[in-house]
Image (tube, rainbow, N blue to C red; front, side):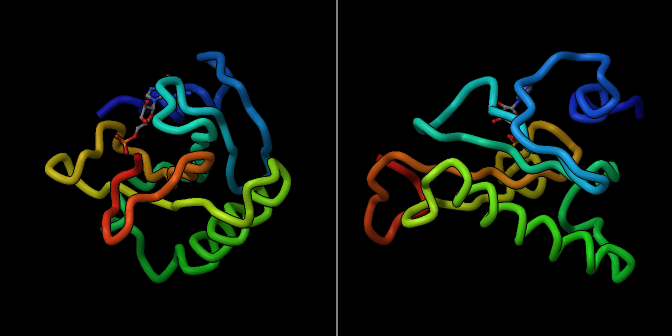
Length: 116
Ligand code: 5GP
């Protein structure tokens, strides 16, 4: 398989609104936002799905989660945000390069993983 769209963004081959980057990940705005704040936190390492992560990725996964919280704070949504990882086509994954959705700015439906 060729490079994912996110690898192309990381390499600078495709433009994106990059809010944050470090040696391990980047954060971009989702091109089709599902909420007023819809960001994607993407590791530079092209792990296709969360299920493909290994013990070797333990520190990276921790880093990503801490960055989600930092970024939520930096954009002012740390009081209420939702984090989502789609794993596999049937779960809605369309880009096979691990990424964390950070969604905020809408009321969350009770007892539901979808948003109003
Ligand atoms: P998934 O469905 O795999 O969990 O999420 C992929 C996300 O990537 C979708 O929300 C989609 O809108 C977003 N996306 C797909 N292509 C691009 C792109 O070229 N640029 C940006 N910024 N987001 C993209």
